[in-house]
Length: 112
Length: 110
Image 1: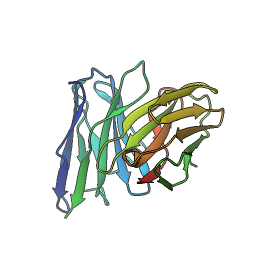
Image 2 (image 1 turned 90 degrees about the vertical axis):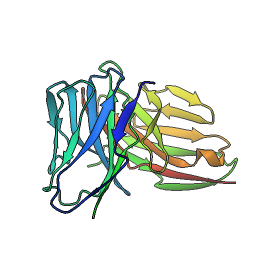
Image 3 (image 1 turned 60 degrees about the horizontal axis):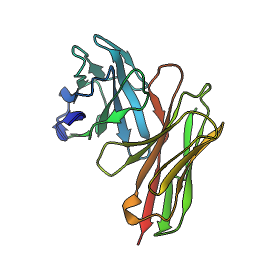
Image 4 (image 1 turned 30 degrees about the horizontal axis):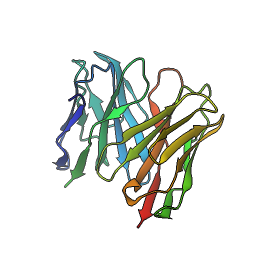
């Protein structure tokens, strides 16, 4: 089945640690996105990539980093510079022709 | 300044009580208005895309409509399983990612 797989579903991070969230898609989509969702805030864009080896900052990129070495994969690293990382993180992808984005099931990150 | 605004924030309906959710947008040169459903703890599920004023799309008890400044998601005779958060989104401009509204949290009570 085609889709977007995020892992892990739950992640706990200690203060000062970097953690990496995985996102893989087998939809052959060119574009991939990372959004953050907080209660009452809606979805906010962290980073996006429209082609391999290229990516752009979204509205809240500070404290995050990404890479796009393969079309299928777009991992997100939450660095220790992100002061409030506890949130629900959503990865999405879309094709170049059709604009609708399809989402993974999310990763809930908690700082302990 | 919000580009996509949804109202109400929350809506509680009795089973069978029809209603509408609103999404207003300020992006210029609209290149699609997108509706999603999100269940708690899950990723958003794509419902509809509307591209031009006057366009309508339906799926089961849901119908989405679009005018030049806003979109409505009409829910006819809702059931408890329609309870979810409904999100609308639009691209800011050109080939940019979707900008989402904050959603309407719908509760349908049996």
